Image (tube, rainbow, N blue to C red; front, side):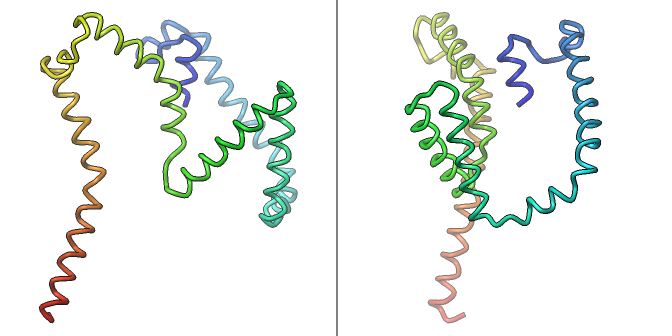
Length: 176
């Protein structure tokens, strides 16, 4: 997330980050220390209140959170379109959580996709619009193969689970 926010502000993270932007780097370090000190100072006296907040039932807390989100989003531009977008993305977020998807990669995708598109466009311009540049060059082909293997590795547990079910079915048929 920090990487994405630095890119949004036009700062290239990496080994030259400290040399190129020492003010941002040391400001970031100082804010981390300051934030930790403030959290300790604020949270130690308020522990009893936080415990009481944790005891609030979910069926009471959820409508309050939703109300504050609606008030906040509507107060920005007084737009019902923003309310509908909040509702759509809220349902999308709920479905993603329900099916076990992580939200951070999605946010990272939204941040990095403009750069990906610009570099894809640049590559296609260099190759006169031919996609063969992505699989005829050795480094690009190796990266594509590696990415394809990573995608396939996510499917292996499903194949193994299906294979085990098939073996169990055969064992049940044979009576052993």
